Amino acid sequence: MILYRGEIKNNSEQEQLIADLYPHLIETLETQRIDVEKLMKACDSLMRKAFNHEYDEYALPLLEFAGVSYEKFIEYARMFSYESLKKRVESELGTDFNREENVNDSIRRRTAPLGTLLHIAAGNADILPAYSVIEGLLAGNINLLKLPTGDSGLSIKLLSEIIKEYPEIRDFVYVFDVPSVEIGTIKTLGSYADGIVIWGGDVAVKAVREFAAPNQKIIIYGHKLSFAYANGETTDQMLGELAKDICITNQLLCSSCQVLYYDTDDMDELVSFARRFHEILRKTNKALGKAPLSMRGKNRIEIYNDFLEGKKNIFTEDGVSVIVKDDSKLELSKLFRSVNIKRLPHEIIISTLKREKCHLQTVGLLVPDSDERRNLEDLFIRAGITRITYGSMRELIPDEAHDGMFPLREYTKIVDVLR
Image (cartoon, rainbow, N blue to C red; front, side, top):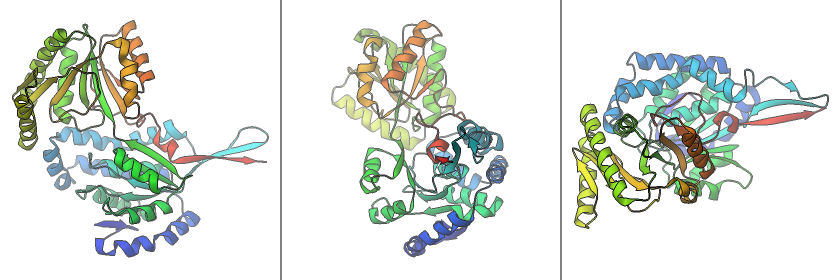
């Protein structure tokens, strides 16, 4: 399915519709503007319908497949509330970003939309493609969305519902089901856009860089890795909160812990810490309920293979695993409640993590409030981290930045008028 000027159409029409698209974009730019207040109210109505279980038909199978709780879905839905969106707009663009201001006697200044955005969505969170489009709308842009492979239909459903609430934005939202291998079609869509928003791994980012115009703006939300950091002062309560994060998210979010670092250079001390965390993770997993069988099966096979290869210090029981490794490299875990534990003395934080500077996102600091914690914050910031948490790594704050950037600012431009 595709969404074109408010109507759901068959994929068989896609090639012709894309060929005919550009004049519609120009006409919209010439004659229409988005009323952000109406848009926020439309999104709020959508959120309330989610609370009333009107989207359970789409949401429940996805939640079951991903092992995500219904409460987590409601938490995501709150991102669409009027209050959350209004706070986002005011925080990033000001209380009236369309208003022109006098900088001095010679310059008038205003913030304006880029024009048209192409969103190339990733498939790790089904609500993300629609939310990316809403961010583009909040900044006043026309939005072209390339769906991720295997999209469930939730994106088109949500965006169609918003159009029903606010019909005037139908010409600002286009959703296409273009396979990633059809580079020519994606390149055509990219040529229509003033900016390209890419959610994806290094391969996807590289492909966009190759076909984008040299001076075309590219906003990258690429593959990210997150980790936790503990030391001798870390409490069982802190580790319990991390274990809860790992079990609830199955480590599928960019902010999920893949490696648990420990501030030591002693391997025996690290193994002792790993045993301690494995017991906490095992109890948390039992209390919250095990991951889906398909996820546990994948890990069981991979970990059994590690045993056959003679790898040591693997603690696995009841569907959770803690794997001790004798290096400090930040890497993706096996996911699904399996975490790597490694040594990382605080003296080598920057030299170790700078190698992954483009992939760093969240560090969950599992240390008490102290001068040492402030020092660690500074080290991780200088290493390249863009998000620091205490307690839960998974929590989403409506007005927080994306990977060190304010999206709405990225989707707009500053226009100076010299008198």
